[in-house]
Length: 256
Image (cartoon, rainbow, N blue to C red; front, side):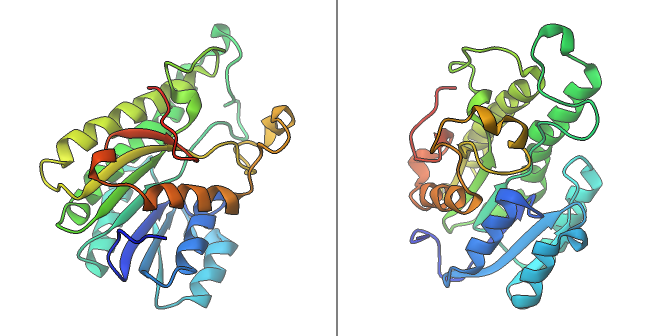
């Protein structure tokens, strides 16, 4: 795996405190070809999983505070990473927001739409990854193979939307997809080796999907380890010709 990347490449996982993000960090640290891993979260010191990995890999894993809804926090994180590494070869924006302990939850009908929930969803799911891309651009645009991957979702596909509802999450992920496509076009002018993609992980056994798992068909609820292995297989096979794509965990394209 990761054959296209240079030996000892550097990777950053944004949203690494739990779930898929934490599993990404763990898998990268298991890979001998990976040199250094940067793991960001709002409060990395509060993630027992991250702290355990940092203690086990003190030379390879660096945790960095980054709040994806705070522009200055994103810029500070980019400066901290840049002080440790001249370039990144993989940046994976994983953090996402579908529901929380407040009244934020997928809307079943138009009457459920609330402005504050729309804003919160767009800040995490759309604006955040774009601001991260802006802050880390200089570390990604170089002459070596690199991938900027944004965790999207099939429900963000306009062409695949046959059920309606989920306005805030669908809309934010659709916006993120457009941003990813725009990044692919612009950044190719500065680095032909940089691949920008949107990825759908499938329904994975995490807190994000927990309230909806009873509806998932048998065999379609993935463990975080399986999801990460599949996503990294997709990432490993990407070339410049794939930049601007929207792909599922099995590598199949998803309609915009």
